[in-house]
Amino acid sequence: MNIFEMFAGPDEQQPQDMRFSPEQDRTALKISDTRKTRLTLGHIQKLRLMNELRTIEMKQELVKVKAQYGAPPAGAAPGM
Image (cartoon, rainbow, N blue to C red):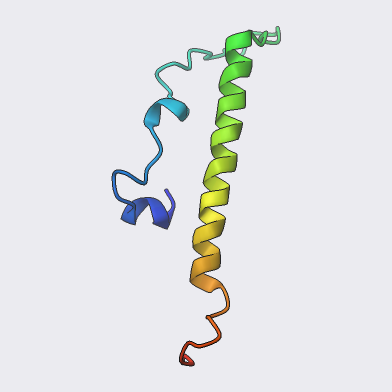
């Protein structure tokens, strides 16, 4: 969990249906399983959605970090 997630309001959080859900993951492999699992179109779609969500979250986090650690405006009073 990121620190931003702790203080984010309910409207700022991403919907949980786009994130990874362990309830839907039923690929428990055993040591005796020697075959590779096949990727289905459903798997590829989930991977694509997770990658897009990760990209969106990284952009949002970058905006917050720039606001937090960026240079102050020119007319602002000097800090510590």
